[in-house]
Amino acid sequence: MGVHVTNESGTLPATPPGARAADGGPPVIETRGLTKRYRGGQLAVDGLDLTVPGGSVFGFLGPNGSGKTTTIRMLMGLIDPTAGTASVLGSSMPHAARTVLPQVGALIEGPALYGFLSGRDNLLRYDRADPTADPRTRTARVGAALERVGLAAASGKKARAYSLGMKQRLGLAAALLRPRRLLVLDEPTNGLDPQGMREIRALVRELAAEGTTVFLSSHLLDEIEQVCTHAAVMARGRLITQGAVAELAAGARGRLAVTTPDPADAARVLKEHGITGVTQDGDRVRADAPPGSVELSDLNAALVHGGVRVRSFGVERASLEDAFVALTGEGFDVAG
Image 1 (cartoon, rainbow, N blue to C red):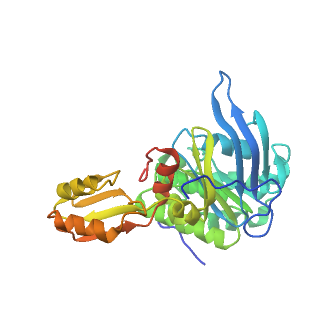
Image 2 (cartoon, one colour):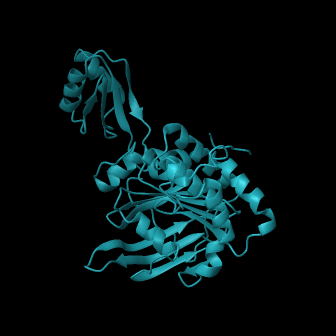
Image 3 (cartoon, one colour):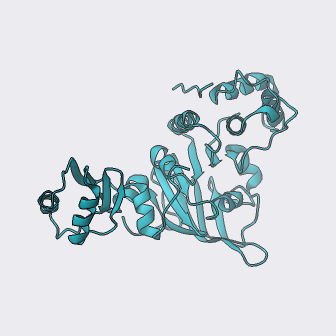
């Protein structure tokens, strides 16, 4: 069942404390110097200054082990920071957890489910645990949440028979039982097939259009680029950059791309003309964009003069992957 949708190379400066978010209101999430050091000295999060604008779909991006989940656990009051501060919906965490968390839907490290209960009964139990939930509308609320994540037809199955993707959907349904000001999702498309991933992205866009700020942690660059308005990049526990997704990509130089049946010759000519980062993949040759002193027309002419049959030639728009590599010097898991 599908989800039913109704409706620079350089670090960008962190927003100063007290600054207004992009929508004119206060930030929905704000941290200053947030640090977590575990026993034994492991530094999981190192001095994090993060600002999440209200109304954004904010991608929290980084390789597995970069500190994303530890940060989320501190934001949700599940673990205490070693140092620094965290504010969620304008209140200090973890001190204000009792007043903040009812306004937050969260799916962290996969859903905690009762395997012996059906999907519907799991949601009913979640809803009963909410002291502010109206029991008179519980059945309708659970049904609507199941429908929204495409699990209505499978709601009678025991949760232990659910696939990993179905469990992720059920966890999302639990987070969506009531309207939330903030939705925090840790790797929400984990275990989903491509169609399921597209459906969850559509649901995230719908929720944002309805006014919910979505904080989405992922190690998938393309997921962040497709659905998020803003992003932060983590690596080895430290914040590398943050800002609007379009600005992050625009800050990186694009990649030169040549399509030709003579890729080896094309790579040779490019290298002879001082072009760096040359790679080959079938009939596609990619390289670092040439410096401003090199005219693209001259480079194209050199390829032709060198006997290269050029089918296409140009500089591709920089992607979030290009920005990440430029900032960290590391590759990244783009597809999963």
